[in-house]
Amino acid sequence: MNPEAERLSHQRSDATIERVAAHDERVQRLRTVPSIGPVTAAAFVATIDDVRRFSHAHQVEAYLGLVPREFSSGDRQHRGAITKAGPPRPRWLLIQAAVSILRRRPPEAEALRAWALRIAARRGKQIAVVALARRLAGILYALLRDGTVFAPRRSPQPVAAATLLV
Image 1: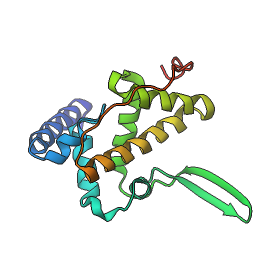
Image 2: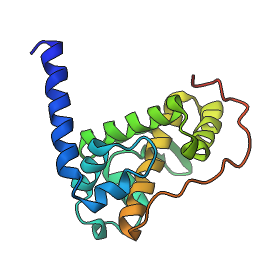
Image 3: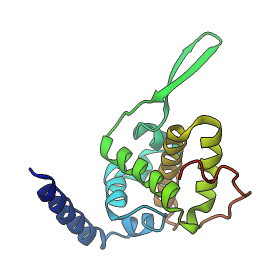
Image 4: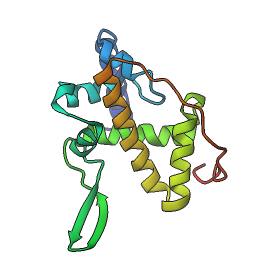
């Protein structure tokens, strides 16, 4: 398939998902989170299915493969790259949402962005993006579990590394 036909196919698929998802209140609730669109919200709802399967957000994050691999021996603990367990599509969509928050700078996500920039200053951009995707998974899980909508928090402090991820 040529690139133009593939792009049109994706646009049609996204439009279909948006029409179907418009009738699902869970998807609409998740869409209140900055950078979470209909495709990401619908994929998350479809992947999680029954939110009661998970007792806390860390289980969802692990299910999606967004937690670090661990190599431990005796007193030594070493954490590696993310496990990439579970379905790849929702993980990829959450990573894209995290990148979007860092690049687009939505005002309602300033606290999340500031948190990720502090991590980026210490650990690097890629780790910060995955950490933000992991946090987004936890937020989406909490919204599904509690039946609430996203309420942004104010950024606790100005970020000196604001140009780090531009």
